Length: 223
Length: 302
Image (cartoon, rainbow over all chains, first blue to last red; front, side, top):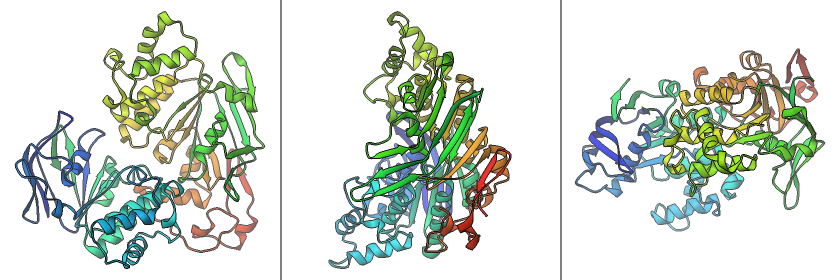
């Protein structure tokens, strides 16, 4: 379980969240709702170590992940992965999809030399990406495929928590349904927790076990 | 027709690739009347944006539109035909891009953007300041003085979208093309956008490219595209509440409120219908499908 305890956060000198707390339970989908600019992505940045809290702390399985006085634990943080709103922004436009996977695998020593392609095949198959697609450049694949690539990259880390930061809001309805159903299947198989950051209350109601809302700089539980 | 602002028909749009060519859209046609909104819906890559670009003559160099038959009625009753229509971009036709923030020059203040549009449309230098403030006021900023000197990065997504609407106010606009205008906006901001579009451009015809069914429901008519083929078109209420084509039905059943039903690939081969490989009702009859009509409602399915 990940718990955010009494956190205050600022972004570009503006206080976004003040003394807020929430819990992300294991093997469940937790939704974080809020209007544009309410601070939803700020929470995602906190959980992935891109922002440091001014007060409070974040605990992961009863161990400190980050606090106002202690730096983000990068090693533990690898088990928190994020898929972002714009599918193409997280892909290098000049790098073939397969090379993007190879880069991550080699940098993080995820597989022995010669076994990298096997690992790539494993994660891409898990998200339903064909062998042809991974030889393309980002500009040659659709938005839904690009989002699957981001998802597959996140899965390489065997994450404990997957953050979907408006990850399907740029996708058309049928691609959104396909991607979310895929995440659901992966979650049921691997016991992954999901933090669904969205402004779509209908989606959060249907898809999540727990719902929190950011409003007036605080986080409150709705479900 | 008397009240028609734009009448569009293209036989095909094709992209030339290194060693081959690819058909992007087949026969696509529609008309929009004064003050009406038509939404183009469909999956990513279905040809929505390319159709809009062909209206403005902004297709990429390797993409060609053939069999184009288009007329646009502009203010003053002047009618432009086919390639003549391209000359009206920026005055008669205005384009509201997908991402307000990304479409503004990050190094220029809102004022600079507005002045450019006003100058292009012949506004005297002495009136630039007042007209720019007026455009912002009309696009939903009650205190435009607070906005006009901001840079794009100081605006929220909703504010940037309203600035792009202000930029579209040329005073001579007869067709507004909005490409995924509410992408990434919350429901309230999306609804506000449509209200603003109506109040800012009451007479103009509006072509809205979207995959947001809730937004499509607010328009007068809908055209559903799949891989460049028109699958269904007609009054939005009829198409969205009583869809006849399996593809439109699949889009509607994929909505959150309908349980987000998946449309997986069911068969390897492609049929004569673009939805054949994923259609749960596909059969031999599909190969002989012709376009069917019931009043203004047109669809392509068994």
